[in-house]
Length: 287
View 1 (cartoon, rainbow, N blue to C red):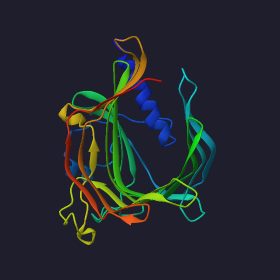
View 2 (cartoon, one colour):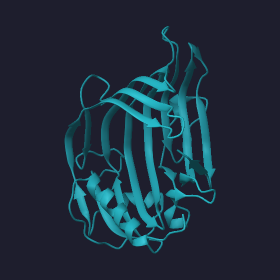
View 3 (cartoon, helix red, strand yellow):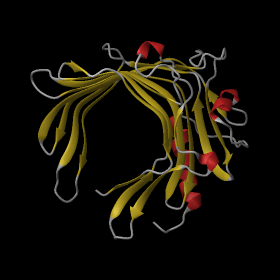
View 4 (cartoon, rainbow, N blue to C red):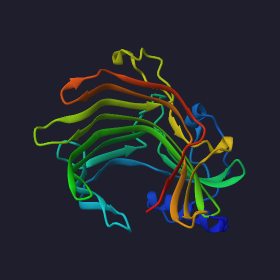
């Protein structure tokens, strides 16, 4: 991973973010490093703003698979469906809703500028409304059917992305406030399942960890810290051992809480992981 193509990687990052909002051009703007709480005051000056009103999306995939190149074994998701959880398409809106409670209805914005003297694309949606549910009919590993998966509805009222290039990879920062009504893994014909209900991610929650009725998640759960010089990274290439691999570093901070954890009918109560501070988390995937 020693070849250096900073211009190419920065261009790829810019094109990917531009394609995400179906636009052909983005104007240049100067960006300043801001604390999480200050992000609510950012506007799309010098970039573009996008408003969405009741956009509906329905997606169904027959299968999605990841196959090991040596053994041929595969992880397969069969019958993948994205909707709203009630048999209707997933729905999205921004620009006409106030999901963060600050009294403003802000659109999705895209800007190009610098973060800590590095070129970056910033996509942020501080008022984002969605009704999104994911269902996997069959999870199959090495030919063995393991069960079905359900995730949702997924709510993400506020989030932002920062993406820039380095060498043969990308730097990025993702921050979001996220809640998921339920995650369910049904693993046999009897309907036994592992279920996590009321999943919440954010910066902090001052409520009693043992009493979900007092919870009120604030701020954004963050992966990467570009302004602090510690971005999350994603690289693809050949390592020192000669093997092609994907390598990631995922520093993160925030709080994760789950209102109820149930397994095979037994309720284990709430779960709280507060004050997460991961300065470095290296993950290497070798296909």
